[in-house]
Length: 381
Image (cartoon, rainbow, N blue to C red):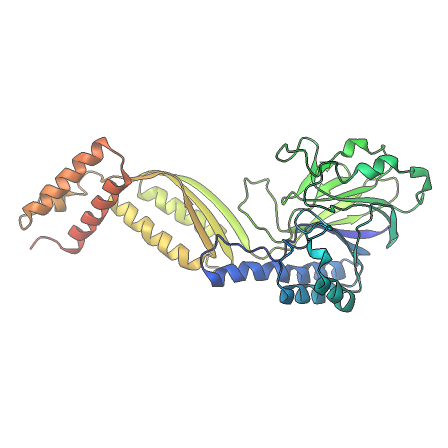
């Protein structure tokens, strides 16, 4: 019973250009390299016969040579064959990264266990019959599985488990654009024992024997609780039977999404508790998409801003979204409106408050917040 580790979409060399801090950007890039060692640990601990990478091992054709060198060394340390097909980011055609001489040389020198499968034909490796469907260009309008229509199944080993390895979108899945389409329905029933898919970055079971493994290190915020990333798939295979599948976590950086409606200080406390539950005291290991809606008083907003400033230092990245109104609650502007030492200040505060009642202009809100803070810092004599 051969045992495989199915993974995909490493996308080593991903630039993360939207991260403004260069040190934090480098940290995320670093994790995409270091996860290869963690995959190796799983392969070693679970005694796998082969690691199958279903495309997009690299993010582009311009990955720095130093990074290629390190990745090849890490792959070379894996205790089993590493069988790879090109995906859309690292396609096998002209101009693709797998045509780079420096990569090919280092692959031969440092990763002799790595085999790039660029020929769409049955291949016997590690007790398996592999049916690779490589992408030889970034966009394949015909579909990388087309060659299987001509396959004579009677010529295949009748005892070795059969694994189809492909990168693309299954029918009815993805953007709807008819490129890199995978038509699994064309496969004769019972002829393929496991279908190892890449391209979708979340864990997904397509049918009883077909899986997207998702990324071993996540690269985007989850769309919901079912959007699982940070794993590889361990599968025990037997000819003519469904695979025995389990997932193993490999990711180290956590990506969170919190959406909350705020109406006052109790909601801020609830937000603080949720942040503590998902991030706690960790520093430099989390990214957060925080969507806040509703309305807060000026003092509550000041406390929220202090929380946000602290989070920005703690996190690798904080992305703020939502429409949160800032509006004074009863009595909150009294020390601005009733100043014996500053009638002009009181007049400005009254004017801003009146404008805010009829307009949700963020500039008016911000002006009133800053005026409120000025009054707090400079009480009446």
